[in-house]
Image (cartoon, rainbow, N blue to C red; front, top):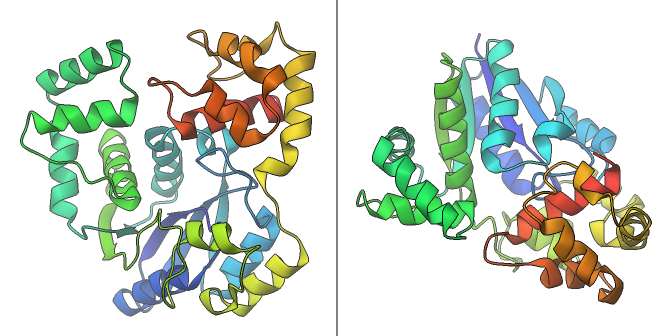
Length: 298
């Protein structure tokens, strides 16, 4: 019997996630599947559209044997920190395989990139780009071109690189395995039976998403949905009431608190605040994570 690890957010759990679990059951019929899952907030600084308790019930209904929450300190972080926290838990539990979706479905390509990232010349190039105000994901991609590698901008491949990097850092015996992802993670358009979580969230208040999710997910989505935008009045109040003390919160550094102070009074929505803060150095997701730290008091 093998222990199989999955790292996920299930925001929300959809037909593609069922496909992932079913493929694992085909590959390892007698396996125990252990899930490390983000809780009420996700890696890109969003609120989970379904709360963590109901996400857990859904996972247990679909052949997951054990669900472990990834602590917020790892969830609301860059991909590398998110992956390291999750892989550390799976490594502690002596999982045999980590199985994740991948657009390229090429584990050797992912391992090659991880090996290059240990190269001193590569690290120096990344630092140079960061010092010039380039954001971290773009700096990685540009540096890899010096090694004749075009980094995929596909989200699951990028997460896969972070997973393999974390396993290497942990000197883990866990074997990473990819499953071919059949859709684009960032696609906002509902397509076929298996579509992205992003497209479901984008369309959930516009059209029926019933055929794209299992019955239990649909049930919970009809009961109550959570969106980070709904918390904007509370976030704005918190920023304004602590206007001179924002840098006590995690990741509020390098002067970004001054940008927040400058635009908070004129920003009338969550997205407007982000766009007013945004710069070449800070990605959209990075700003969302910073604002979430302020919102929850971390």
